[in-house]
Image 1 (cartoon, rainbow, N blue to C red):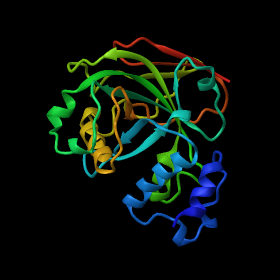
Image 2: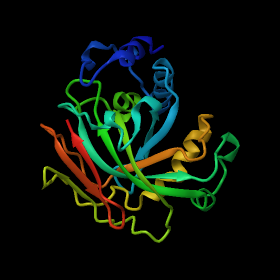
Image 3: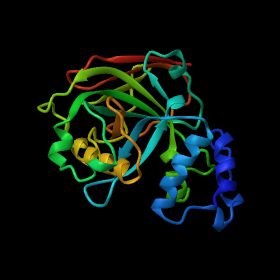
Length: 249
């Protein structure tokens, strides 16, 4: 049903597609259709689900999420993580992993049972980009189908999960060439990002997607989004976590 869109997305690069080139029948009309296109897109690219991104715009309404393919998730020290291009944005986030896997039959687990399974957390930088021109002025369901504008996720060092860590105000710092590039208030839009984790677990259960042990789940930006126009030294940290550094080229 969405072959035209799928074929275009499979080979598209940053902001290479014109949304107006697609007919109404080519576009997802519901959240369910957008989520199914995400999974089909990863399959068409020959990728496996290596992580998830989940986020929300505030306390009200459901979150949204997208899978991150194994070709788009890198350790922060990977040389391939240090290349940027104009049109992609940077976000500073926190990620989490679990000490167990989740299957479809786990859909009725309580929030407390899911959060009790947290194993680790750490710092991540997401490259945010769209395959569509005129982004962010692109149909929301089309953005969601396009794996919610994920370009890549760069994963920093891992720390044992600490339930007492200040996830509400973790003092984010993001600098490029010594200048702060924070564009927001330094808080996650939903407050405590851990509230997103039971939701994404149930999403995977609902769609029959195994969420493997230690799968990375990143939970939205503390920094706002910054679009670098040139390279340089990028430094990022949260309170109590070791600073990470990238040389963007």
